[in-house]
Amino acid sequence: MGRCMVRVLGGFEVVVDGRPVPADAWRSRRAADLVKVLALAPSHTLHREQVMELLWPELGAEAAGANLRKAVHYARRAMRADDAIHSEAAVLSLWPGQVDIDADVFGAAAEAALAARDAAACARAAELYHGDPVPGDRYEAWAGEPRQRLRERHLATLKGAGDWPKVVALDPTDEQAHRELMREHLAGGRRREAIRQFERLRDALREYVGVGPDRATIAVYEQVLAAEGEQPPEPAQRAAVLIATGLVQLNRQDFAEAERLARQARDLAVDAGLAHELGDASTLLALVASFTGRWHQVFREEFTASLRHRDELTMAAFDGHLCFAEYHLSGAVPAPDAEKYARELLALADESASKPGRGVARLMLGEALLGAGRYDEARDHLTRALRDNAAAGGTSGCCLSLERLAQLETAAGRPDLAAALLDQGRSTVQDSRLRSHLLVRLLGVAVEAATDPPAARIALTAAERALADTTVVCEPCSINYRVQATITAARTGELLRAGRHLADAERIAGLWQGGRWPAAIWEARAALRRAENQPAQAAAMLHEAASAYAAAGRPADERRCRAAADSMRAGEGAAG
Image (tube, rainbow, N blue to C red; front, top):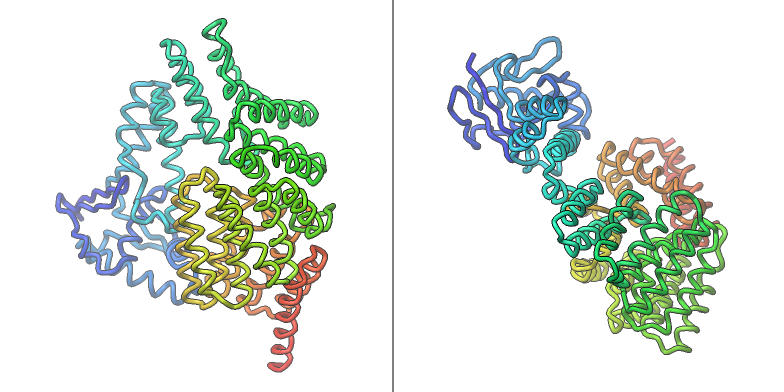
């Protein structure tokens, strides 16, 4: 038997006795996938059932076993050796004792360097990492765990080497790396660069709702601001310290102090005309208000005050409340009547002749009417919301209006119109600083709108790939996508895929009390039970969903679930 070298870092290549295996030699994509899976596995050995689960999770044991036998056959032919894939006692091994894999070489060097705490050795180990494993398969579920494991080891070697710029390039939210760079800039007399470094960290962390720099980072930033003696910090810098300190107080559950700092930062941002900082301060204030059960009251006050601001500042204040509006206006308990609440805000905006105010209020009103199943009224207000938000330059307001209009057209049975609206929304969101919140919402509706099973599978795969290319996704904003992905995967017979999305949906919905999302989770569970050929359980879950939708004030969703449950039970009775 010959000697084999497998390269998986930054690409895929197999060399047997010095001769590369041509790409067209594999004959079957799954033959190459089998080699990749074994190359990335510990000891390059897996039980055949593990391989079947990784490569054909949607198939039964008999069909998956047949596919595995074919993959083994073609892999051996491609590598011209019967023992290239060794099989013994249902265990498959890749070139046992005769294989060299670049990921192993990197892993061994990294482990030794980190154990020795040798910066130079860490730097040499990091150079052996030529890229993420099998990049051509980054959307395959089997590649996720080894990719994450190797990425984390690569980051550890970079940190061990003190290569902070590369750490930040790979993980923009790594606070240790940003702090070290701030210290380096400060020691070199580059105060302005140190400030910019903090701002880059703050912007990266803002992608996560409620996450800000920790106390250690704030302490370094305060040293930077004090470095030039009598020169006072600029308003944006002072606001950044207030917001970051407020988030620390929030994490300590000192809500009064967090709110005081949020309001101080907000006033400073308004006076200085700082939209970015106003958005951050509004997010902190929304967090405090949400935790203390006062969101509706605080948002009304903030909305009223914002009507006196420039359009840019009004939209920034709304953006800060984006995720919280999704929760608090969707029937969460306790909550005022959503339609009445939105109409009161609209009256305030009309009185002030505020276009962004009208855009925000009409969006809320349109969403309330959509949930009530009053489609004609909802379409009118959402169309006006889109126009007002566009006139005010509100990217997030435009995207959310397009999202709701697409949901409306989907519910009304006009998927082509929904698709056109979603295309417009995706074009709008590309340059938004709230892309991590808005894109996943649009993708959720895109999956929902694809009613034909083949089209739905394509839409779900496209959504998964788009999100895989997104550094950060807001979890609260992703709940509808997770629900729709579960339902679509279940309907197309991909039960493991459905189960993964359902687990994510359940985890996110578990953070909220009340509202429509617990109802949506029941509906998603029902879709999975139906796909598992358990109609009685599915019907019972649909009735649970209907009751929860009714409690959340969503009569159209309630009717849909009850009709589906009754139809399922009628079909079960006829079959019996």
